[in-house]
Image (tube, rainbow, N blue to C red):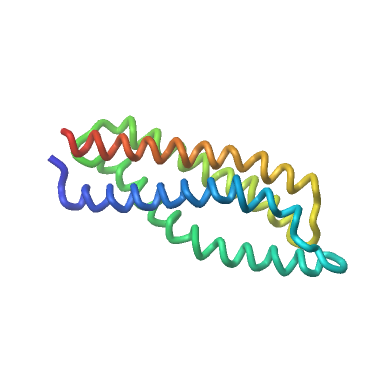
Length: 154
């Protein structure tokens, strides 16, 4: 039987991962593709304003979800809910590492490259490589769902 702590961790894990799935699909299909339509202004001044606002605003959206997701992911790895096998939590944390690693080592540097001026190549790479994060977070959402089902039905 699942403990109260395990149930709370699962609820927070499910909420945070599926929030990130929604965010990443919105970014992939709506937000990133329209970067090339932003009025760049004179000497890219409007582009820089847009980029600064994007980075500040998105951090407030994804920061709490990623923190909750990271903490609950590690918790489930150390103490799997409902005494399930560690296999699914290991897969879940691996997918989280792929999403976070791609964010840190690919997406953030591309955003930094785009910080001062718009660049078609950097924009294309941002949209293309974001599919890695989209796939990792989507798969992670399914795995966390499978963890919840396994833990509850034990």
